[in-house]
Amino acid sequence: MGLQLDAQFVAAASGGDDCPVGAGVVLVVKNADSASHTVTLATPGTVDGDLAVADRTVTVAAGTTELIPVTNTYRNPATGRANLTYDGVTSVSVAVIRVATS
Image (cartoon, rainbow, N blue to C red; front, side, top):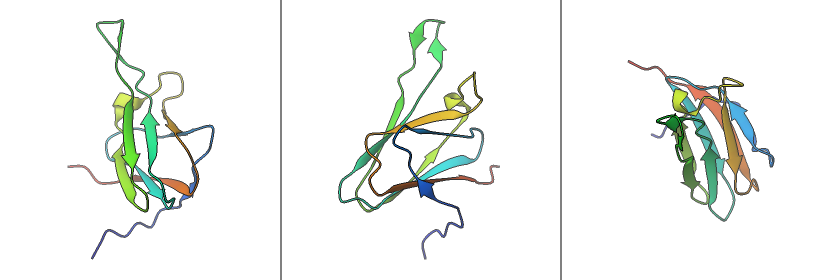
């Protein structure tokens, strides 16, 4: 038996989305499109004060669901939330869940 999610999914926004961050926060991306889509999580941090950390990209294959941890690494200091963008939003829906951490 697979994982059952009782989460409220919404359509991915063409201009991007934001979501909470923290331990146990997971972005659930459902791709019902016939093509894969890429989700980008902005990484606002730097190393040694001036070396930018690359953004994280996750490819969600056609017809699949991907679970993406959204840790404090992705916290935008101005908003306290993660910034998300998509290469396309056709038939893509998202939800944010929190899972227990030990």
